[in-house]
Image (cartoon, rainbow, N blue to C red; front, side):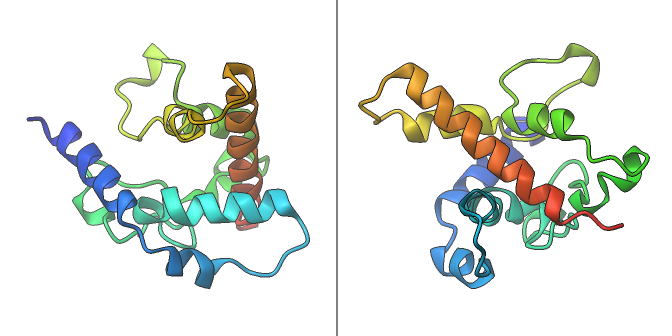
Amino acid sequence: MSKLIMSRILVMAFLASFPSALVNSVAKADNSQSEESGRTDFVTYCAACHGVEGKGDGTIAEFLTITATDLTQLSKKNAGIFPRERAIGVIDGREEVKVHGPRDMPVWGDWFEFEEGSSINGKGAEEKVVRERINALVDYIETIQEK
């Protein structure tokens, strides 16, 4: 089994057992339900690799085959402009972009769709929820940008 597959299995196994107490301890009081939802998904799905503060120092980062991105630097590395569409595309991951090479990060669009699969509202509603979750996650990542 390749290192890439093993690292993906490790990430998914870790996330499946991720304690909800950490999610609750990191979540701050906030008026925005979208930002709170994004923060919760970040801690649940991203922090293992990217760290609770998004700096690329998550608990399993040392076991990854590539270095986890410091998500607090996305705007700085993009001439001070947050690369929203790029972030959405990377997180969703369901559309393959051949020039970017192999995908080392889990395809969260598929995972969120799987989680919504038990919905009785149908495929269109599932996709709407997936888009909302990804947008909330990107909204949160935008709030952790260092100036």
